[in-house]
Length: 70
Picture 1: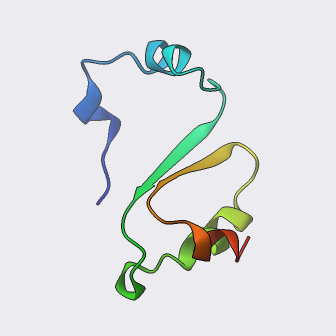
Picture 2: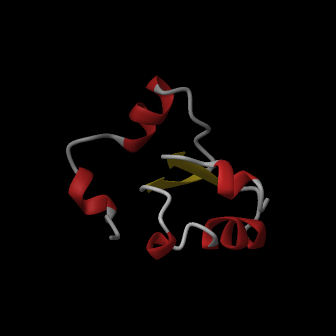
Picture 3: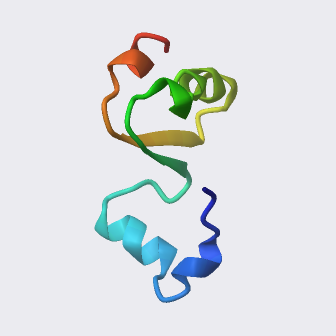
């Protein structure tokens, strides 16, 4: 599911990043899911390895299989 910035109109993105001590120049990608074959978790390292240093993956869930593929 894709969530567009429009859903968070109430929040100021820069203010939230400052409160969370997040870099204002980075692009954060959030992945929240269980580690099941049907979830295609193996794609995450492949995608992240093709992106430049501006992108940061924030993963919530079991990450063993992902770390093994970076």
